[in-house]
Length: 447
Image (cartoon, rainbow, N blue to C red; front, side, top):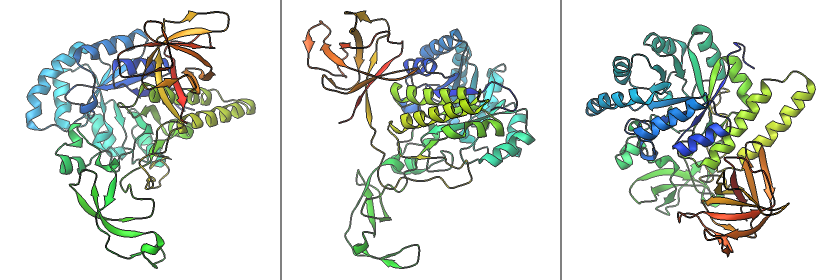
């Protein structure tokens, strides 16, 4: 799978210490998280300096790595605070920092001369001369722009063989160029390049006038309202920004890119020179993170040991199984992005595909009690409602396990008909499964 015989890295997002632990439990080799004020996920960042240090120590206790993002484009007003924060970061002991801004790069080199520096995808490295330039500035690894194709990756690695290459393989795609978007700043005064994007590209928009108009189709023929196609003015859901767009009978989500899914292209990426496969999603749930990390971990392991037809057949079975698991999650439809040289697809029909399953709870690892030979009672932290007649599965590192829910008890061990999240209380489930693994999760089939 990897011509250079270097160990490939599976890199996962860590929106919190808890999510970080799930990422490692399900197969990640490393995680990335943000410094509180200088990350491109500033509004959804649960980390502070103490929890960053806790996260780094936990990662190192497992022999794994923890990277910290400093990838905003800084203004003068940020620099003074950044110098103080770099003093704090020095105490954390992270394995590397990710930067985009040349000014921040200079500060990092000055204040933390020993730390490894990675170039964020936000810096838009799309050619080998750009990669070489950044390497000459002290960059050890480059996270390539999502717009780079497989052929371009090969050429970059050929010309700059000593630089590590990282590439996004799964998650949301920005409709703008590698995240350099102005919509949020224009519409809400919150800059995407300072980690404060409100994602207006994902909003729903509705028609504001009924004026009868016409538009040409691809063959140049006029389509009218009778064909279910309109050209009209639309306005965002808060009634502030009006613009002219085309809409068919399904409505319009005209900025809504499909999500990236490169599960079946990992060998191609590794052969081209990518050494770290990166998953997007610091604001996703622990359930989403577990399912996605597990899928990529399993495929990486199978691809690394395919030697004969029997193993190839097993790999294809596992690939289909994990594709089904990824399809069961919340997503906007999937695309290979720019990898194969095509324009990435957009989902104009809806905001997202409806998931088949809903994440409903985390199993408390050390709370399993045997009731009898066949039944187990397990403590659960609920995230959504669980009812006795729900079709539920336990998710762990080895797969999805259908279980029968026999009874539900509240925190006082009183039998109840349902469990509910958001109350700060745990419940107990009596189920027909023993030997539940640490970091197991519960999902239910959506009716």
